[in-house]
Structures are given as structure tokens and as C-alpha cells.
Amino acid sequence: MKLFVVFCLVALAAARPQDFVDDSPILQEITYKTLEDAGILRMESSMNDDGSFQYGFETTDPIQQDVAGQPKQIGEEIGIVMQGSYSFQTPEGQTITVNWVADENGFQPQGDAIPVDANAAAQAAAFANAPQQVTFDEQF
Image 1 (cartoon, rainbow, N blue to C red):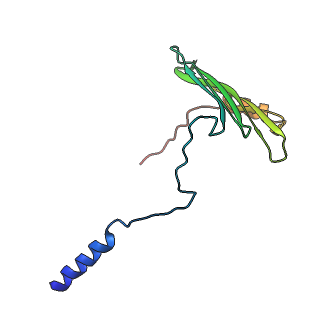
Image 2: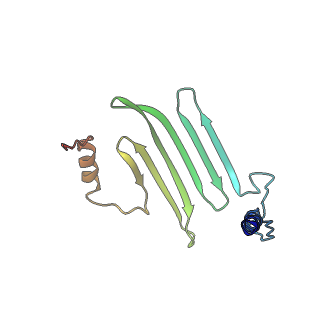
Image 3: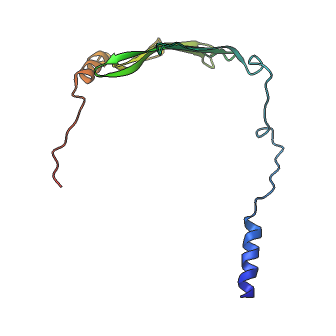
């Protein structure tokens, strides 16, 4: 019985929280006084009473994004449709911009850096016209 108590005390001592101190710069908290100090040049966001919204930001990297969305009746449901754009700079210095729409037809990006498939429009139309509900005739 004494041996059991000793093992329990050893287990308790080993399981206690360990003091962890790491002066690594990766784990140190970084505090910014302003958005500009964090590299954010612009940050905007607004939401309207009708459910529509807009937001956007721009950084010093340079990365930029602007989005607008609004509720829309889609079939019997109300969904949110959105449109926007984002841009960033490649390591070679080229600015890539993508304009996009997200609605009942899915996410539709457009831009010079996005390959265009000749069959993409036909595939999108076929998908949009495909049955939306799948039923299984299984008996258990």
C-alpha cells in the first residue's frame, strides 16, 4: 500500500503544469499601436438594414480586397450573393487581379491569371441544369 501511495505522489508531481519560459521572438507578443504599423493602409466595413454589406482592405504588401453582398431570393430560399475583387503582387512584381461573383451559379472568378477552359461555360450550364436532389431507392 505504501508503494502505491508513493507511485501516486510521483504521478501527481509529474502531471503538474510545468513552468514554460521561452524568449523566442516567434512566441513574443507583437503589439501595434495603429493599423498602419501593422501594414494595413485601409480597412472598411459596413452593413445595411436590408442585409447588404461591403468590406475592403489594403495592405502594404500590396494586397487589396473589396467585396459587396446582398440577400437574394434563390428558388424558395433566400441566399447571399456577393461580388468583389482581390489583388496581390507576385514575387516577380506582377500584380494579379481577380474579379469574382458568387451567386446561385457558384463561385465565378475572372482574371488574366486564371486559365480559361473552352468547355467551362457548357459545364457550368450543365451543372446549373442538373437535378439538385438525389434520391435513393434502398430497402433495409
